Length: 568
Image 1 (cartoon, rainbow, N blue to C red):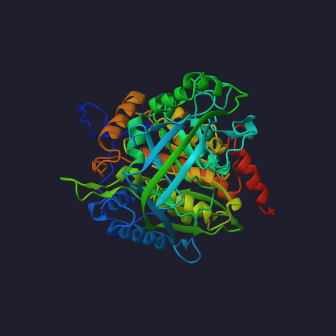
Image 2 (cartoon, rainbow, N blue to C red; image 1 turned 45 degrees about the horizontal axis):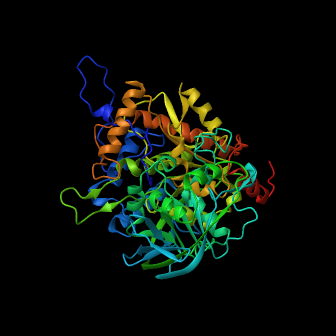
Image 3 (cartoon, rainbow, N blue to C red; image 1 turned 90 degrees about the vertical axis):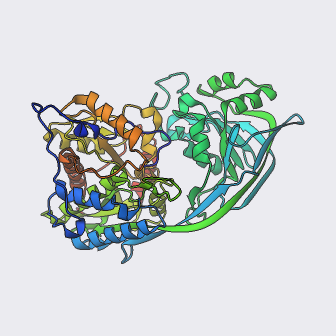
């Protein structure tokens, strides 16, 4: 799971690991499973089957499932074998594998950036004042005397009546912009979605839109509050190797360079230009804002090492009985952080929760669909992408090269880090309010006497940080539900404590290992509910749609217009 800040309410594990008094009611634990190669799987969604998958995928033998490693070979072979065992068809033109080509770009320390304000040069310190990168797959990028323009939030949202680029030609220029959505700084609930971040507030969108507008470069002014993370996160995340699809495989417009300015460096730039950044921030937060030329230019010399590599998505399909050209798609990324040979002690990042649990969930749901009678009318695709931890690249590649036209994929259901700490009274929907898939989930949960809860921190934009997002941005309705925090035994308090314990001690650490004490009773309820959502879509009983105020609705409408008419 790739996050700049940890999403809360992940897991409730500590609750089941703490010692309880003899008089307390104990949560039943899952029996220790045999290795999956010796395990006899049942057709039902089953806790011992699930545990066998998790235990195998997160074992030391799989070395943390890093793309390009022996761990990848073992993982993808295991997944192919499981799909074959289930009798599922290869999902990619006769193959269970889809090769994902990627480029690794590492900015070198001799890269430079400087501003020219009225003939006065300001050289910035890389890492302290600015973080830079390029998606061009070029080892040397040089931009000279590019005019700087402040474009507010850098948002072009026709459905919201907002366009920071209206009447503006930024070709060859470098745009400077703010993080998050319009309305955030003023706390205006009437602009966009108030506290909840939309895709327009995400830094990835801002760079993409700047490239579509023809800019040469783009710089985001960092601000801890609206970003929900500090400058240290920007510095750490932006240093070292950066992964991307090759320009050939992902031909969308790309900037020559993109990056971040620290708030202090940006304030100094605006001051030297005779502008007050604090005042302009508030002006940009108001409808009708016009872009402001800064009367300054930027020079960038970006040197990077470039390496081309590859990894595999794993995909299978259960062909639909009557509408095989339409599908519901389940997904969970298989990759994790691998083995760090230079690290003393336990240096295998096993990724048991993140995301062996999600993969095991897809396999269990696949088994249920295979056994289902009657067989689903629509096809069911099971996608296990790679490179989620490197920027959602496997799913992005699949969306650029779908095994079925995207117009035929009616819904995506993503599983990323499932809980292992007992039954819950709720399920947390990340990106709550995006699509009516939540209605189908709510109905399934009602049968379990459970409810949906929105995520606690929607301003962090977590909906845009897992693999389903690549489908959403192309218009495919996508559901991302995490396990709940309201434990049947202990309530929300115990769930939140356990989630924080996971974040502090196991998330993206060697401690994310399989534990025989875990109980998956609650996980099975989550899987059953998610299976029921997909079952209804696959049967044609439920038609997924974006909500009217979703930023993805326009894309969804365009995608539906491409879908061929089908006979009932």
